[in-house]
Amino acid sequence: MEPVAIVGVGMTEMRRERKADGYADLVYEATRKALDDAGMEIGEVDNVVTVSNDFFDGRTISSMAVQDACGSYDKNVSTVEGDGTFGAAYGLMRILSGSFGTTLVCVHHKGSESRMPLITNAMFDPIYERFLGIEAITSSALQARAYMDKYGITEEQCALVSVKNHRNAFKNPFAQLPLELTVEEVMASPYIADPIKLLDCCPISDGASAVILASEERARKLDVKPVWVKGVAYCSDAYHLGDRDLSDVRALEEAARKAYAMAGIGDPARKVDLVELYDAFTYMELMWLEGLGFCARGEGGKLAASGDTAADGRLPVNASGGCLSGNPVLVAGLNRIIECALQVRGDAGERQVDGVKTAVAHGINGPCGQSHCVWVLGGEK
Amino acid sequence: MEDWRDKQELVVMEGRIKVPYRWSAGEVGTRYLESLRDEKRFLGTKCGECGKVYHVPRRNCPHCFAECSQWVELGSTGILETYTVVRRQHPQLAPLPLPYGYGVIKLEGADTGFLHLLYEFEEGGLAPGMRVEAVFADQREGNILDVRYFRPAKGVS
Image 1 (cartoon, rainbow over the protein chains, first blue to last red):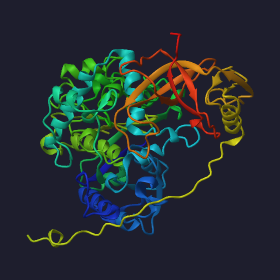
Image 2 (image 1 turned 180 degrees about the vertical axis):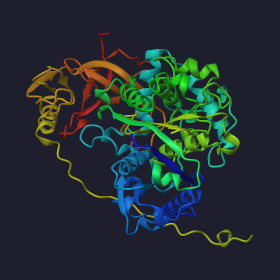
Image 3 (image 1 turned 90 degrees about the horizontal axis):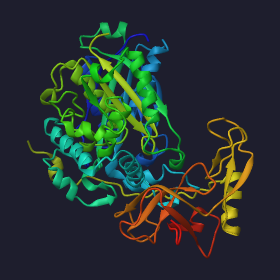
């Protein structure tokens, strides 16, 4: 792959309700920050990818409604409906096509403006599934149960993820939900859908974020610390939940395998210094770590209990606080990439982990991680 | 610094999007739903190449990418593959009084599971691998809720 770098990043603070900011205001804030971070002006952006979801926004072609805010007038603008990691992958491909030197990718979401369960219910098939009332939490509970039963993962092991990530969030000014918790407190929180309890769930959030990607030639002209895209891949599993073994992470294993191969990584557990993954629910952190190859299948619980995934551990996972500490849907995936980029640059402030040379960012799309996108980022080309 | 927002409520437009839709179940879905409605019988479709039986039925096998040309009658009991007991749900979504369950159920004769509701179970009485049976609605209208829910199968384990 031709070298492509992340040259600018911008995040808004994630909050339960950003009442003073409409969608466009959030997009403008994130875009402005990304441009400032890159030392660029909007005229230097060759093309734009906007990412949003029409049901969440309450309007159709929602991604075309933020054009003022992302400066895409008179530019080639294209759109992605899906997680920000997938939007960024599309932005990357537009540079690799040779047609563009820079791509701005911006993502927005306001969970405060609709009703989350009614929206996530609508991702299910209207003939066979939707009228059963299933949505994101209850479908994830089916997956959590399948995974935990198969491998003997305990609710306490999942609770450790909630304790760790909410604590990490204290060092992240963008995070919404820093909490000092004990495993006992997580265990005592009410069940929403067994085995998922309130403190196993990410919050509802508002936020936006943006990244600017550049070809090597354009990156070299900027006064920035480029973060190089070493590998990217994605892979999807079946749509109907019953077609999948929900305890399985086939699609993630495949995406990770391809991304690592691109990046020349044989053993991710040795080569990767930091991971930011999509922990919408606590069990997901364990499952996705297995799928990403950081431990064997079924060993995610033990890995969580070992302390290795703490911010000061051998393999820090979600040192930012993760999605559990702020989950503007779609935005949250791009934030995983941004957090990795900041860590590789050494610009992650209080949450900086020492010596991050290679970082892995991960996003999901569809119910129960139907589709996975894996990014490997590094400081060296 | 004084902020005008401290003195003034922000304008928030209240709205509701309610649009009628007409989702076609297609020929395959129609035959399936009619069979549930008229005969209380579950049907699957079988891949002409690998022989895998899909439930819910579909026109083509996603693996072989061949036509699922054959209809197969399935049992109305099956194995619970995974489940959850729902304790809290948006009132607009909950189709049954709380607590109710969701399960992925592999019906007798099918090679794939499907999603449906669980009810009439004891607290702690669900387990993966257990046998569950369909409870049909008296008034059936040709939709997936013609099966009211599944419950632990009586008399067999």
